[in-house]
Image (cartoon, rainbow, N blue to C red; front, side, top):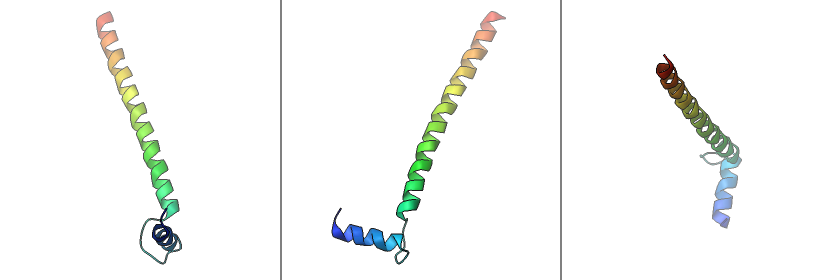
Amino acid sequence: MALWKWMRRAGIDDGSKAGVTSQESEELRQARCRLKLLEQENEVLRRVAVCRRSMSAVGS
């Protein structure tokens, strides 16, 4: 990382400059990752529900 980027990041992290801190950035990254996983799990559950409905309609 270039020196000026490091200086800017240090200023943001210590509160002397406006911006997203390293900790906030990491929390956002983790939240986005968790959200993606939950969306994938939700899609799987939707597909299972559709499959079960179609199977029960055939069995009736």
